[in-house]
Amino acid sequence: MADKTGYIGRNPGDSSVTIARQTFTPTSDTTEFSFTSGYTVGLCDVYLNGVKLVDARDYDANTGSTVGLTSAAVSGDIVEIIAYKAFNLGQVSSSSGNFTVGSNLSVGSTATLSGVTTCEGDLYVGGDLYGDGSNLTGIAATDYVVANTLKVLGISTFSGEVTVAGGVDVTGGVKSAGIVTFTNTTASTSTSTGALVVSGGVGIAGSLHVGENVSVGGTLTYEDVTNIDSVGIVTAQTGVRITAGGLVVTAGVTTFSGADINIDGNAAGVSSVTWDASANSLIWKDNSKAVFGDASDLQVYHDGSDSLLNNTTGHLKILSDQSISFRDSGLNEVFAVFNDNAAVKLYYDNSQKFETSNDGTVTTGIATASDFVIGAGGTSVHTALGTKASTGKAIAMAMVFG
Image (cartoon, rainbow, N blue to C red; front, side, top):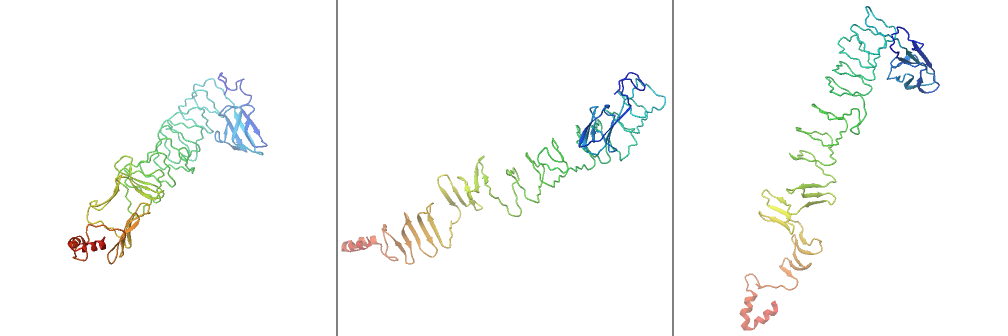
């Protein structure tokens, strides 16, 4: 920019031209061009094949000597750079009539405009532009504002659509009375990816509909929620914890596949009953009882020393259509066998000693008894021996009955 020495017109130290123009015809892909006569930042236009480019979007002219294109010019393209040189005024305090500038106007300090300012060409603002905008009129709906940075200190109201090609940084709140649509389709794979990335929390007063997967890295808490409806499968990779209300399944089949199930008792951290999926076993801890009946009439449990089958009401009936067998835990020895419509057999050390039959019983080995009665209503052997002792018949009977 020209210095402020009070010259109206050209300063001897200014460039020898008021408008500098330089044309380039690259022979290969080129993005950077050196402007021989230099330029003032903000007072430079660039044309590609006769089409004016937009500063900051299509090119960068920030050095005063070089211009960089966003997209490279190729062989056969014509790049034209036009720079507007300085017009120096030492001081203009007032003007009784219109003040018309045919080309560019550069102001090194503050410019205060109390009336109407008409700009028929481009208006470049290198610093901040202040004002409430209440008297800003005549902006057509098809026009747009191109700026590297747009700073709004107050409230901005947009009655139509707002399109932002880059990012939007907001230090305060953003309110929208209409629908906010994000057309970017980038999928979210973490907290820092996706079409919408929010660093803080998100509060939603209404409904939330998600068309694809929802991933939650922390705790998902439902407050004041009556029902959670899922039309598909709900997968909980680290378990489901229900602190109140219980789990109610009103229809369908509940399947626990390939996982252990623990049922805790009143001792903290101790599972009273465990379904061990790998062992295909339902394991009951000591003194954890399987209880049946309205009055807990039948109980099956292990007290740490013995196994108990306790029935407190009625008869304990063991039913079988063929046989009932009592054996050791290794199935190596038989204690007793009860057969349907057949013999009852009793064993000693896995050897059968007693068996019932249609005619009576069969005893294998020695049968020891305090007395025997022969026949229904007959006399006992003990009495008969005592009676016949005087006749000598006792010896014969003793020989028969041992």
